[in-house]
Amino acid sequence: MNGLGYAGGMSETVSPPPADAAKKPSSVRHTRAIQRDRSKRPPVSPPDPQVEARLTDLIHPLTLRQVAQYHDLGLRERVLSLPVMVALVLSMIWRQVGSVTTLTHLLHHEGLLWTAPVRVSQQALSLRLRVFPADLFRQVLDDLLPQMQGRWQARQRPLPPELAWARDRFTAVLAADGSTLDALLRKVGLLRDREDTPLAGRMTALLDVCSRLPRRLWYEADAQAHDQRAWPALLAALPAGALLLFDLGYTNFGVFLQVTRAQVTFVTRAKSNLAHEVVRTLRRSSHVHDALVWIGRGADRQQIRLISVLHNGTWQRYLTNELDPQVLPPEYAVALYYQRWRIEDGYAVVKRLLGLAYFWVGSANGVQLQLWATWLLYAVLVDLTDAVAEELNQPFAALSLEMVYRSLYFFTTAYQRGEASDVVQYLAAEARDLGIIKRQRKRDPTPSRFDQLRLTFASTA
Image (cartoon, rainbow, N blue to C red; front, side, top):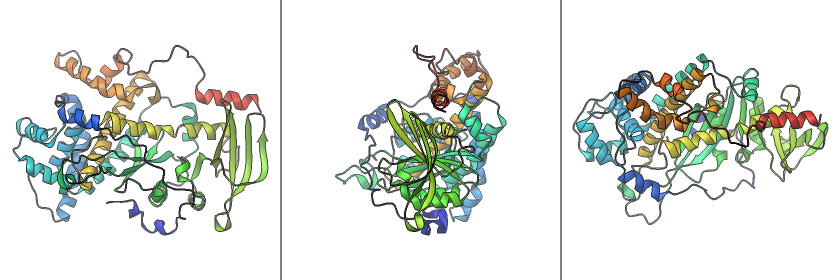
C-alpha cells in the first residue's frame, strides 16, 4: 500500500491536473528540535486503568478479528503478533517513547496495554517494525472508525448552526485534504549513508466535519505528490448525497463533473484567474454576488455557481455545483466552507500533539505502522472529547481536544488518590479549571463567523 491507486478503475476516468497545477514547494517544518527532544525525553507513565481499559475495549477486539487475515498472509504466529504489535506502537505514541530501545525495556519490565511482560531483543523489535504488514494496522483502523461514528451519532450535544443545518440536508459533511509528513531520521537503517533528509511521505484524509472523525485515510510514499493524485480514491469513497469541502489544490473541472454525477454536492474556493462566462445573475449587492456561470472547455464544460462575498475589504469567491440558492443559500455555502478548517485541526493534533512529526524508523512500512496507530489514538481521543462535550451539553468546538489529552494526567493522579473514578465525569467537572472549555477572549462577545455572514447577507438582501 504505497499509494492511492487501490480505488480501482476510477483512476482511468479522472482528468489530468490542469497545466497550472504545478506542485508547490513543501511548507512542512523539518523539526530537528522535535526529534532531539523526543529521543532524550523519558517516557510518560502508563495510562490509568480506566483509560487503559478504554483503549483495550475499543481496539483489542479488532486486533483479534484480524488474526485470521494474519494467518491467511502466511505469517506464522510469533511473540510479536498483531495484537502485541498494535499494543506496542500505540503505547509508543501515547507514552511518547523516544526510541525502540526504551520500548524494548518497557515491554520486558512492565508489559504494555493488553500485552503481558515479555523479553525480546531490540534488534528483533526493530526488524519487526520494518517488515510487519502495515496493512493489518490500517484494517484495524478501518474497522474502528465506523464504530466511533456510531458512538458519535448516539450522543446528544449541540452542533454549530451551519453544521446542524447541513446535517439535516446531506448524508454527510466531508472535508478532503492532504498533508506532507515530516522528515525521517537518517541515523537508522538504509538511510544512514544518505546526504539528504528524505520526507516520510504524504497522507490524505476524508474527514467527517460534524464528528471530527476520518471516514477514510490514505498514504502516499511520494512526499511531492500533487493533491490531484488523491481524486480516484476520494471519488470511490464519497457517499451519494454528501457535501464535500476541498481547497484550491483539488481544482479539476473534469473531476467536478464526476462529483456531480456521483450525486455529491461540493463547495470549494475559486481561483483568482478563473475563466468563466456568466449565464444568469441570481443576486447582486454591494457585498454579495451570486451567479450561474460556464466554466471549462470541451467535455469539461459545465454550468456551476459562483458566489462572491466581500469580507474585510477582500472579495472571496467560491464554487459549488448546487445551482439552486434555495437548496444551498450563499451564506450557508460560505459558512460551511469555513468548516473545512476542521481537517487542518485534525492534522495539527496528530502531528503536533500525538507526535507524528517524529518517526522512529526509516522505512515506509514503519512510517505506515506509526501513521495508522496515531490515527487510532486520534479517534479514541475524539470519542473521549465528544463524551465530555455531551456531559457538559456543549458543542465539540467549545472544547479543546488538546487540553482533554493533557488533563488525563490530572485524572490519573486523582484516580490514584481515590478522588475520581470516571474519566468523563471528572474531565467535565474540572473542565473550566483545566482549560478544557475554551476561554473567550476579552474582546468577545463578537458575533461568530457564521453570525457575521448572516448579518452581511441579511443587510444586503
